[in-house]
Image 1 (cartoon, one colour):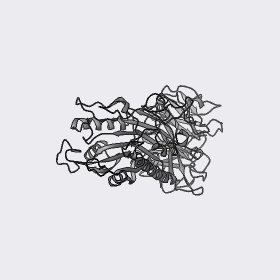
Image 2 (tube, one colour; image 1 turned 180 degrees about the horizontal axis):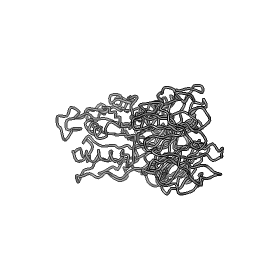
Image 3 (cartoon, rainbow, N blue to C red; image 1 turned 120 degrees about the horizontal axis):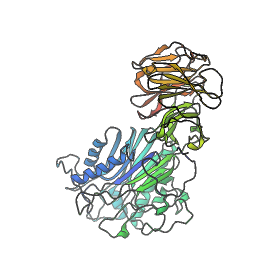
Image 4 (tube, helix red, strand yellow; image 1 turned 90 degrees about the horizontal axis):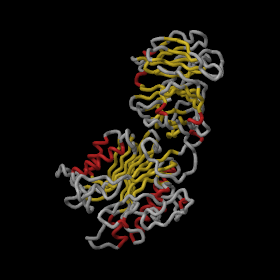
Length: 591
């Protein structure tokens, strides 16, 4: 059954971070312990393969499906090898923080690798990179000076640098950063170094969010949740002098509020959010009292909500007596916050790979009639839609046929969602179809229930007349319609107050079937365009630009979206215009 997306305040809960249930913005952070300089961490080829495979598993679209990856304590050669495995769908950004001594950060498969001894930080994001930067939080020289370290054997040799990628994904532009704060102990002089770094990090994040770009910060912050260091990031509502603007992925996990982290005080029994969480640093080879939560996924609360998180199981090492890392991988996920402006008919609906239904508003600051649009961020408006075989958009409603052949009308709720609790059962027996269209009043009888059109597997076109509140029978209105790989019902495309049909054949020609509203229902087709096979999807979202004429949106093979303003008269559409920030995955249903 489909369930609604409830717009509520955060609730204390156990982790819900499985592939099919977690929110759509997904992050994994992992301290790879990759240099070989930390006691017990294995830099061998076999251990590296385990590290790489864990990241591949976490980013697989058939698994967790993380789009953002933060890597801490990573060598340049490891970054290069992982980038090759992830492939071109991921943008990657590595920054060097130190040149190690001989024997560390050395590629076990290539002693002559020019990247050897280069140690640093990395971030990967699935999507098209639009900008990259490095937040320079500190230098080794400055830390040594501030702490009065003069002994070369005790000196800090690593700069504190944060690689950040701004990428364009289906969610719009987002900054994602990989963080590793100084490893001083809170309460010591090192605490003040960490405080300053965290404050600088939070300040930069506020600047980006002030410009309208969401921010995700993930990595090893080297501080426990309740410390003043992380008060720069946690929201004030979490107390303990918090003054930041972020929600942390594990802050609502009531299973880990009390009695879990060494040295942590108890959270109030009535609290829904708490600065605690699961252990992420295992302190291998050390007393259990030194285990900590120091790895985090932070989402800017201005743009995200309903975050969940989970510290995963320790990654086993193939070599006894050593380990892949002394940290565990950490997952974090959150939903986008969507406001009233996102609940609009001027939008594109998309069914994701996991059956989640998203709405993307088509936004423009110009007057009605514009052809310049920006694709809005994705708003999750339904779940469980992988159980729907066919779906068609009928105004603000969705007409859907499930795998059993039952027809349902899903009415859009005031918050923009579509759920099983807000649907009407319109009958059964809608089997054997491979296409469903909702053209409106196609038979011209002015019945309040709009008509439907279905195409069966033999290419026969059927009209389902709306009668009362149901569809009691069907009428055959055409054959050989399987010549069209794409068939849409745009509404009244020709300006005569009768709904029409559009089809794209195998050669890319676009054909118009003008509706008549009387038996026969459409006249001989007219060829109104060519080269439309550049689109793997053509959708008719209605009157997007507010000029009372239905429009078209096409997705090309790169995922880019194009807008065609309907004109109502020949040639029926204006030249195409790109939709800014418009890039949606191929293979996913668009409505």
